[in-house]
Length: 363
Image 1: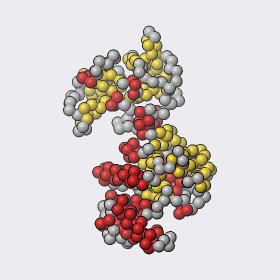
Image 2 (image 1 turned 180 degrees about the vertical axis):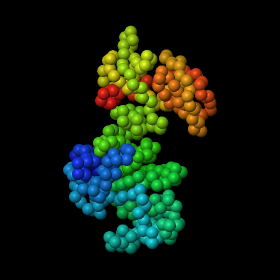
Image 3 (image 1 turned 120 degrees about the vertical axis):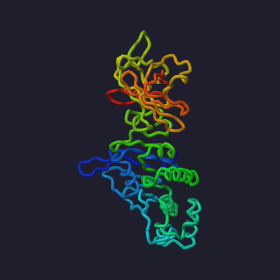
Image 4 (image 1 turned 90 degrees about the vertical axis):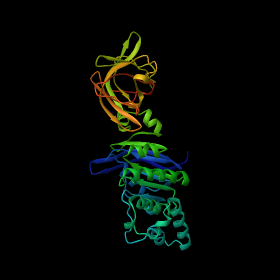
């Protein structure tokens, strides 16, 4: 894979506060990479370093094999879309799109061609004569994307572009951004704290915490094979169920033991030799727990009690009490459960995760 953007040993500190720490990242040509993390994790700081809006303390940034670490933003071959639309309120949509090109003294015919192309791709042709105050939030963000699009650059940077929109608009514009990437095939780097945006848009996701990338992988791997306890807990709504215990030998059979209850580890695919007597955390996603009629001849079942039911339309979320733990389970929406109902449950260990209790790394 040829690299569109390469980040080498990048660090950035504000006084004694380390925001980014020896960060290395290669982004493929035409790749859609999402930087995901909670507020303060360093994702927007990293994006601003790539854009040239912040100077790193150490390290280098390459775009298309050119060292741009100290280049001005305008010379980096990037287009940026911010959380705030940052449109000129006194200008029409057409003027907002063309203004940067006019300042760069581009020929009028080329400007008109680029504006028309961006308007067609983003379906904002009928809005060209309007001013930002006459547009909805979604339309304004389309114009902001269009302003980056007319620059005809290799790399697009998105800094939480949908966070100011309501849920319905976010969903619609998310589809538009995905369609835009499929059409243009440009490299896109997208910052968000929304895991749904990350999972639906990304070719790869970089999950960040305290200026360090915790895991860099495709969405399916991030979701199903989290590298550590932090990633496992960050991705998924509701979060993965975590049970603290230890491995134990029961007559030659390895089990996970917690609060006097054993769960056989048959089918778990450990990445390293697994022995008895190790303090571990078992993680199981709500949809990887089967109950009652869906047990399908499971070798091992456990009794639990329904505490709360949350109907969610297509499915239900059950909160069960079992052996001192509260466990969330996702079930089909057609069946209802009253609080206090007894159910049988089984974990799908082939889809479970096991983490070392001390290091919090996946086993």
